[in-house]
Image (cartoon, rainbow, N blue to C red; front, top):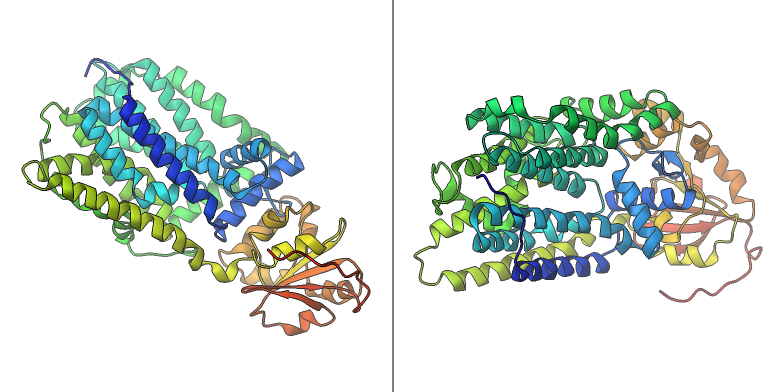
Length: 511
């Protein structure tokens, strides 16, 4: 493969645009899922409102679990379009669209127009694209940049007897953006895949004539400055971000979501749907249905899938979104598998249309079901009332939990006062919202004053201008004495302070 072209036909562009517009429509109609979307949308909103573009903050408290690219992009999106949910979701949607474009371009390069269109329809009608592509967290960003890095490095090494330096340097740019998206996996996983592939395919000698110096310099210029500046402001950032949040989370067994080693097999079935079964004809195959496909490309796809799947299967903690980086090569393998399995089937086109409808319909239905999974955690039913009644300068207390979506929904201009027995919590908290708050407070004691103990609730209930939000199932009812119930939602209830009649009556419009 001595010539690399990056062309997409008008028909393929139309198909990509249609799928992306469907994704945007789905992104508009669903409330923020909690905790993830509430957390990350609010971090981006707070960055814009506070003007602090260096330090991501949750409830005004440093939130240093991951690097800031997602938050930068969300804050920029909301600066342009307004502080809306869809503006936050535009960021993963744009990255999902970029993932699809990269798949289309490279599939066209390796196998031609028909295969490229089949691959993008398979990926574009799946949950990977239609749900993961508009879910506000870091997973789609890092998956996209890991994939683009692998495509670019792969094309670079396939270019000829030596690596194409320009493609390789753009690969380092993608790695840098991957690191800024979610940390070291943005560099480690592309490096792992390409290294194993070069050894397997007998191309290891090409590594000696790779633009390492210029590539690593480009990577450092893009990726390193934020880490240096943040470390200067918060001593211990490196140990926390790379040690506790990445290495320990990978090797430890005391983090959330422990799952069996086979978890990602089910996750891939969920994310790719019926198209996954067309990969079976490619399992163990040493050739492709299209003999023009370079066998090295075929091996790259499989090594990409297996290396990353094994990497994420090792730790005890597993989440569905972690496996998103392997979806583009799986889509291309499925497209090849379809061509092999269905080449002589009489009703292949009818079957294709039926499966497209099934995959598309399933993804849309599950997208709407996401709301049901976290309905009891929503504050969407009390947020309009609080927005209507709350006056500038009023304080908002939270007890019994953490309403992740509430600050975004009410466009909070100052931190909530989160009430817990924090000395006890520090001794007993697991991998949960309490830990992410008090660990962030350790970096900024002033911001940490938003974390208060239950003894503040009594005096606060007798002062005018205070509000309290508590879960409806809150067990410590004594915390609510002296507070007047204003609105009982499905999952949370809203209370206000001061004796009855001391607050002016305001009639809020029904949502």
